[in-house]
Amino acid sequence: MSGFAIDPCDQCEELLQPFLDRDLNDEERAVAEEHLSLCAYCRKRYRFEEELRRFVRQAATEEMPPELKTKLAELRTPLI
Amino acid sequence: MGETAPETEARRLAEDARDRVRFEEDALELADQVYRVARRMVSSREEAEDLMQETYARAFRSWKSFQPGTNLRAWLLRILTNLNIDRGRRVQRAPDMQPLEEGDYFLYNKLEESTQAPNPDEERVIERLSQDDAVSALSAVPHDFRDAIVLVDIGDFSYNDAAQILDIPVGTVMSRLHRGRRILKRELAERAVADGGGSE
Image (tube, one colour):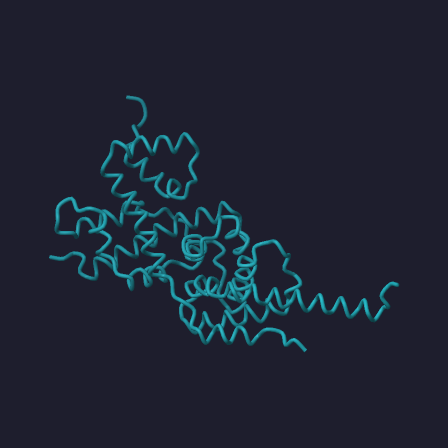
């Protein structure tokens, strides 16, 4: 035996964030895509991560109170 | 023939006033987007509102230092970030970079364990999270990591813009984002389990 074999799912887990950020080079991307085409376990977790990002973004979005917008507008420099 | 000195001066002042008004209008149009990021950089709505007012007051005073054609939203957030630091938020010079035990699949695995159905699909799994938990988990992420998440994942800034806003190298934005998202998932897992995600 020479060295340690890397578990392909562990490797795919490491590539998850840069994959979704479109930050992988062609070779890394091909490795991830090939594994994902064969592995339902990783595919589910990738899809979940995409959903999760949408979910967090939506949950964390709080609209600005309208009174604040008025206050900001009042900070403008008077015209005269 | 040519303009007299007072006429030239009057024309310059009029152009200046017009540019300033346009700048102020552009900045105000972006206020909703700036607020969304500001709100998650600080812990309370009141703090976010104060910070927004200070930011806009400073932006309107120093409008001439903005270079037209560059990213105004990033410029406003740079001011906001600096003011936030001035207000006493300590810059974490060396945020905790010890390795995290939890990888990127950790949250999914935890939620799946607590879902009664065998081999559930990912929609069922995400239903185990609540919006309140997402907000509180995000605020539990240490601020240096959270700022990167808020700018990139909620504010839609590029790594480059986030690096300029936070005044750190692009590589640092990427590593904080990567680690911050894992911390966020750990926090979410804790909340989902505490909320009865354990189900039995």
